[in-house]
Image (cartoon, rainbow, N blue to C red; front, side, top):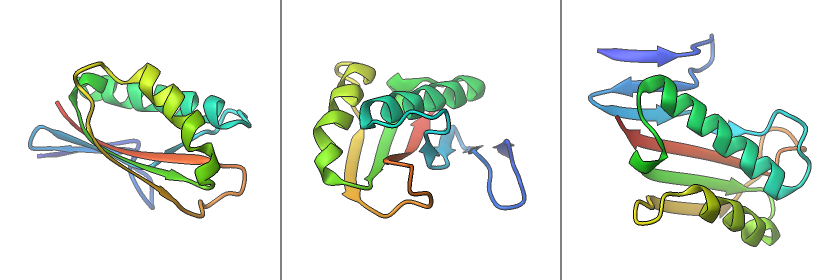
Length: 114
């Protein structure tokens, strides 16, 4: 069985199958303008989605992080390191990419176990 959360005509915010949560790319939509604020907002959205599925950040298997500017790497990492559970850090990749809206500085894609 596949569960789809907040499914629309283009995508779902999260799908769950075989004990694994697959989150769509999460971006800041609350108006934060700096990388730390946007990263906090994105990780709060990740927490909320994982909770809806019955999971949490200690079960994150993999993270893909897209930054519009690698100069923001240190600021994003500062917030990331405050968020992750010590000893439970996931596999992770971080790349520079053009995001769909110019105001977005970071997009994070998460895969987590239930």
